[in-house]
Image (tube, rainbow, N blue to C red; front, side):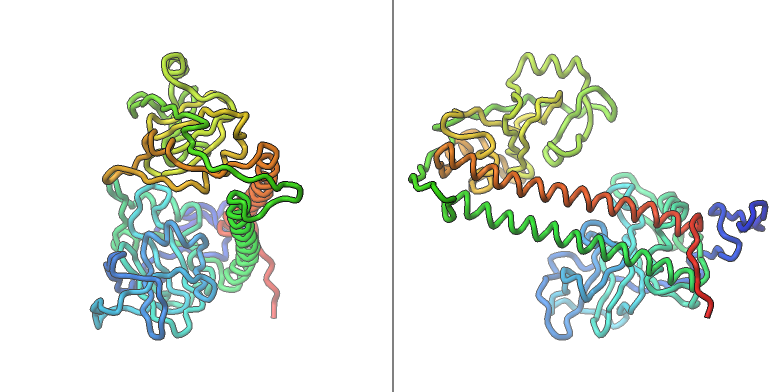
Length: 428
């Protein structure tokens, strides 16, 4: 590791940069013992809990489901259970309180080395599953609640990504991970840092639950308002059921191929899964002008609707220069004397389409135009749309607040984990 050189007051230089002089650097192999894992597939699991069931930590859940470094098993109820008929090896390692599980494979570079620490294991039987590395502290030099954060240190995180290999899928080997260095504050400081970050996690969790509650309430309100089960005072006129083809028509985008796009450019380009949020790539202004002049193109206020892949994603086009992928996207041109855009946007949630296709499902024009919709008067449409829009706005503001909180925690975490900001430890 080489001798540390002290030339900054209160800090020493290490292979992981400057750290406080009372901190130390140890390798993963010094701190942890590895545990056995399994390779059970998703179809060998379920979500039905029972007495004595065997829980399984799957690498896909570390990437997509467990949003915080500490997996509190008292609070989180979506850990898969291994089916009763699956034979379990006698050499399997059951995880304990404070054990670490790392996903050793990732389809994107950002997910390399994603790690969780188990909390409130109690008498639960839990194992680490497919594409994971599980390890247990052996020296007593790390504090419970802090262990997963060891791999959140900026330079440690980079070191883990450096050892990842592969092209389409990045993988981490146990032998390479053993050589990774970790930054260790004194135990009391680890405990204080863990407590501070836990406080932020609780605030984030509370706001996340509030967003989920608001979204669920909005979903229920939509079901009532858009089906006429709940009416506003003063509206008694009967609704009409009409086919979309009677009041509108579908237009398709022209396909743009991947080689015509780039990571940088003039005009945002949206594919199926991200349109209306974050663009996947860009196209040149010349290509945009060419396609807009030759092919159908949405106008400001038109609804853009995914008809393949993730069916039913929708946005209202804001009129800004952008391009949306070929026939995977459609928009409706409709008679505004019969239906408002703002109402149609929400009414799409109530539609049930019979998609066609094999591996890739697709909504063809005829399917969309044949779908039936409940149609109140224009005035009632306006009232419904404004009520649901207000609910959307409230949810969006809460999501922005949540994102700000998450970014603040991320900034604080980096300062605490590197020793840039020190915490005060009360002397007993």
